[in-house]
Image (cartoon, rainbow, N blue to C red; front, top):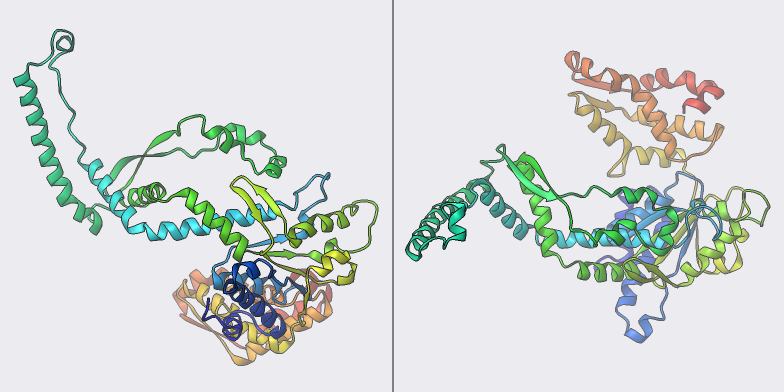
Length: 467
């Protein structure tokens, strides 16, 4: 993190997101300030709270993508939630505390994955050894010659010694075979061989059906409550050695990992580096109204203590939200940021307005990002054995059509490119398996784009439904 300067963060975001310099600058500073806070003395460190961000801009301009890429960049727990999914306490729906519980679950999954990666080699060796034991099981011990010997004295000392020696000799031969087989198992020689393994039965109990969503308020899962009362069921599965290695490696890794340590690290990670992205916050803004929107302001008041900093109880323990970074976003077409309750406005001190995308921006989106649409469609059709080439004028025309439709109907930003591209490639995509036998390359130029899209673009009603 120390080498991720604000400029470098912006450069990384530029690889995936076009434009929006101000928004990138704000999130880069928020991220860098987290690193700076970690360097402070403990007494001052607790006093520095994150500067939450409010992004204002139409749909499809990169609000969510900026936050998502930012979290991926620093491997921080990240969750995107819709503000409209939550309801005020007392109404049917999800309570706002669940966003913190969900963030912790993501954090646990991340830490668990990191720990698993560290012990992967050790777990794989244990799994391979287990496979060798399954390929060459230990011989059954024969302590008695018949059932009556167990009652009337059993084996004599000399007979028992002979039996034990015989067993040890057999075990020695088997251990020798296991030792030599281990290298073959590791090299993949036995990958297609079928073996029978015992695995944990993770089928959820029928009781789970009756555990309602209200139970999440206490952070309790009925399976967790009653799961400990009964021993875990195990079932037999017949799989290939290759699949057995994967299943057993996971099982062995679970045994090596200390789950208490994972939970403690996860809570700390969520508290110190967690990012919660609250989308559609404009939909819960506005003056109090009667009817279906009665709980709008109530949801804001419920979100407020979490953003301010409070302690949320989860099934893994308490989680403090004081240093979690909150990024809220909304189009604010109907309402405006000042319609939010004053206390909540004050908790989002950084305001960033994102620009609508121009024709030039849409052209850049088609070409420049690492995951650009042109690269995606070229790769997808390429799997059928066909290379598609987009000429410069074709890309200009696609951007022009997308801009025109955005202006004439709803402006959905870069998402319009998906609908335009999908319509443009539809016939090639459908006929690709047959086309591959006749031609290996297809050139898409301006004329091709016009032929495919001109009728739809001219007919306003048709473009509203199709594009």
